[in-house]
Amino acid sequence: MKTLFALLLLLLVPPAYASADPVVGYWETEDHDAVIEFLPCEDSFCGRFVWLKEDSAENPSLDDLNTNVDKRGRPLCGLTFLGGFEKEDEGVYKSGWIYSPRHGSSFGAELKLQDADTLVLRGYFLFPFLGGEQTWKRVLSPSFCWKIRDAKR
Image (cartoon, rainbow, N blue to C red; front, side):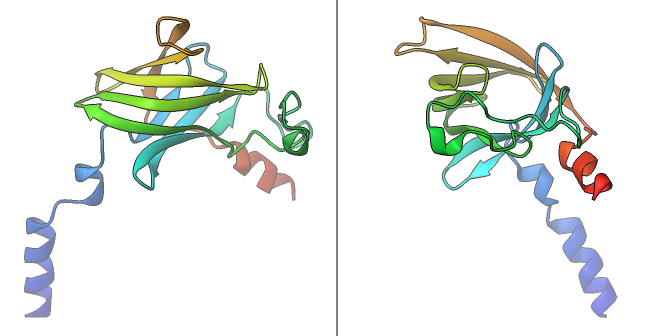
């Protein structure tokens, strides 16, 4: 009887990923030098680095240009550098921010899903029309930078 109940429950309750927001998942940057994981963060969405092209156990990528001196030198692997994205409409996320380790500064940001596997990120200064866009592609089975580091320990 318990087995029958468990089987019925599995058939009636959709898996967690089925109800996940379409932005949730792994995305490769336009220049193919990083993979980002988007995930729910409290009442919005955020993103963190999970793979960096230039990252290795011997030479980890570090946040060396941060304008906040106390944050300099932290590893970029696993760093949440995107946040505050609120779903405004289906596939449209606004009110976000992006921290650019290349510049050491944060900017406003918006996201728009073009389709299930294409995400457009717009970073800007002050107003959305004062910025630029990157197109990211979904990745189904990414590598993870922390696995490189863990293998060397």
